[in-house]
Image 1 (cartoon, helix red, strand yellow):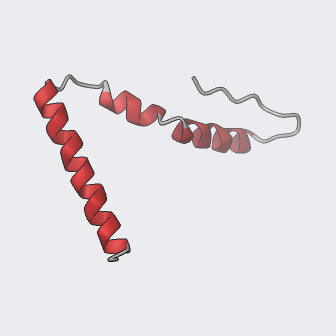
Image 2: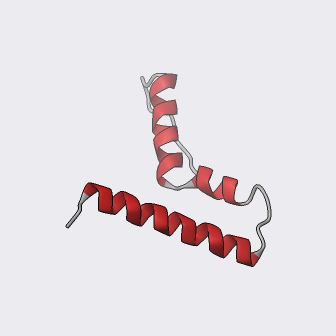
Length: 65
């Protein structure tokens, strides 16, 4: 669970910015989206493989060697 305590003299915007960064680093949003609906094990495997293919294509585009 992401917690951010406001420091003395800190603006609300600054604390909110730190909170958003912490949530992003802890992958909380990704976890919530993953639990939003049920995927059968076979579907989960297909999604995982599709993401791996997408990552590999992106990696090859950046570094062709």
